[in-house]
Length: 231
Ligand SMILES: [Zn+2]
Ligand SMILES: [Zn+2]
Image (cartoon, rainbow, N blue to C red):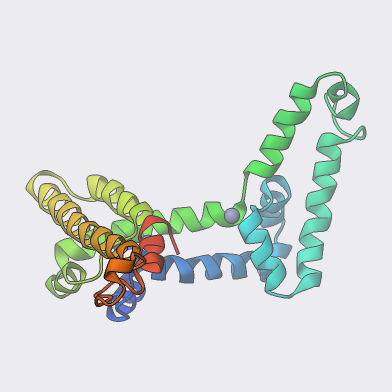
C-alpha cells in the first residue's frame, strides 16, 4: 500500500494548477518534517540521538527558528552542541582538539561531517522518493490521474530528475518507455515555450519593441526560476 500514501496530496496538488506538482507536495512534506522534529518526537531518545549526531542544514534550522517554539529548539540545540563540543573539544575522544590542533585535516573533516548532515533533509528526501514512485504508480494505474498529470504544467528540473529515477524502478519495458517519453517530450515543449517567453522579455527592453505586446512574457522570469530550481 506504500504506493498509495501520497495519492490524495498528489491529486490535490494537480487540482491546484501549480507550476510543479512535486514542488507543491514537497512544500507540505517539508513542513511536516520540520513539525515532526519540533514536536513530541524530539524527546524520544532514539530521535534525539539522531538530531544530536546529524544536526540540521541552514535552511531547516532557520525554518525551525522561524517557526517559534524556542524552548523546544533550545533543548535540541543544547544536546547537539554538547556532542559538537565533545567531538571538537579537548573533552572529547583521543583525536579531539588536542590532536586536531596539530592536524588541521582532522578538524576540517570532523567539521565537514558535523555541518554536512540534516535530519529534516534525510526524512524529507526519503518521503519525496516514495511520493515520486507514487506519482509514477498513479500515472500507470489510474486513468483519471494520468489525464490530469498529462495536462498539468509539468515539473521543475530537480523533480523531473527525481520522477524519472523513480520511474526506472517502478516501471519496465514499454510502460517505462511510454512514461519517459511523456515526461521528456512535455518538459521539452514547456522549456522551449518558456525560453521563448524569457527571450521576448529581454527584447521588450529594446527600444524597437517598446510598443509591442508583452505576449506571455511578463512573468517569464519567476516562471523560469520555478522551473530551474525547486520552489
Ligand atoms: Zn518541483
Ligand atoms: Zn535540511
